[in-house]
Length: 389
Picture (tube, rainbow, N blue to C red):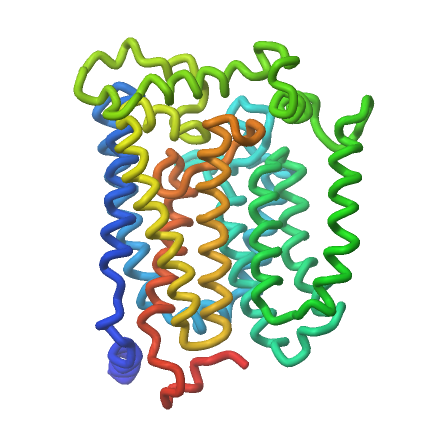
């Protein structure tokens, strides 16, 4: 009885008037669009039903994570971080690892479901960095904190990178960069670091273009060279992206959704249209206007993340929201950029729209945490015991 009363009091202290239903509705619309487009491109109603199950499971996860105080959740971040990192390592070094015939061991096969640890690792790194910055807020302006924060992000990144998942590794590095830049570490630390890292990145980029380089796999290098010099690249290297552009262009202003003849779609010549190239069938089916609406919906999620960071009750909540917003922003930019050939071809799911249960549920967890940040008591409330110092 006492535990129930305590739980009720914890829920009652939340500012429920600030529960962002508009964010929830936006995410719901995006996931329903995903379910519909997947049923169209896969040609069966079962795909839509399966996606609907994922949507309802996702909404349940949003609700659960929105009422769990993120301070309480962060108390367990050492365990969460270690488990997710070990799972990322297990894809390569355990019998559970599965490549789904792609040559990249990014999944754990639990027989009942396939689980992709890199998706959960992104969120775990955000929470771990937020806790680290919050605990060391008074001592951030030194190189020790920079190197420790970098180590927190780089350990799981290493295991994701050796899966041959370069894109997810880059996402975590972008999250690290954004959280470092907004942590208050200051230019005295970040300035010299940038002065070293920028030339190093330039050198690495030069090196990977040299013959016999050892950093990238052959297919990865071909994709980068094809992106830089499309007029010189072999047709098979740019085949997927070239057909993606043709498919997107064929959607024109209103799309082809109402013509009913899906057998003649241009996106049938593009691989992985259910996940990495989901933007291609979306563009052909919904056209320019539909794409614009979907980009507005995705922008709402991203802007809401950064607005919640600004309104957060404490520093840790602000850092979590910045990390989540950065993750959503970069993944949207990268996925659409690859489909439109603005960026080299690499696999990265489009939040809430790409097929993949792990990605969807991880994104739903992130939205739930954002909602919890939004309903926390105002700054200066008497509930200071919920703030990590």
